[in-house]
Length: 380
Image (cartoon, rainbow, N blue to C red):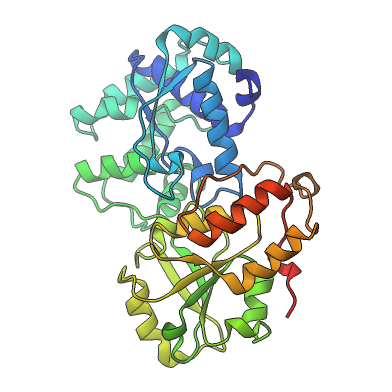
């Protein structure tokens, strides 16, 4: 992938824009940008399946083209490089080329000058933190910097009653609840320096179905809603006796799922209520003494969810009773090509998940077959 193609990726384009804006705002050509899931929503809970891998490949292509530099990354087993929140820097000698690539005007425009001036004179913010805010220009449509800065003042004056970041953003910025999605760390950094409580991300909604003595058999995380419902209604015999959890979209948000402040459990109407306290106590304890399994589509996106969930459920395994029939079908020539599902065409292969069965059987089969198969293809 060349730089021109890479720059068409929305996440990569946003990164270049942020680096160039920081360059203009501060004059510090070496100031890095951290690729956390606040700045890069593709790496966060709102990311679509496969989106994180595609965006990371585009960012790596920009690095290969010499436009940016990614600081050395110390990876952890079962985690992708982008999940380590690496720092990215603009290569000083390539500023003009980076700007040309995305059509960014390098002339320091009046808006940037006014933003920097407004931050420098913001009496409501401690002087040592004014530069911090000035280095993160916050454009909202065509609104003047003074109006946007007034919203930041409301975020930090202690009068706001919001608990969650999207509530606060809507309050401060004309009902725009997503205005702080890529500035979550920044606003909490500034709130901390003002002695204010941090804003919270919206909790993950986890739908669970509890059965009597389910912790003994373990917990099965299921990717797709229709399969979760089939298991909940007893149509999947091998899943009977297990607690069930609907785990779609957990690829980038797994690190929050076992925290009571960032996750909420919702029980099915047929759950065994007597199990609720025991399940909650275990789930939010970070203990690893209950068997945990994942079952999703036989594709790279689903196995990425498995890899991500293993960061908080360290012994989680791909569920063999569910994956084995999918694997047989795939090896027998069934399945669909990636381009036959528009949501899957951009999935990228994984090196490993950390699960022995997935790494020894499922990933090699995907590589050999060049096809995917959805978990709904299994009927019991």
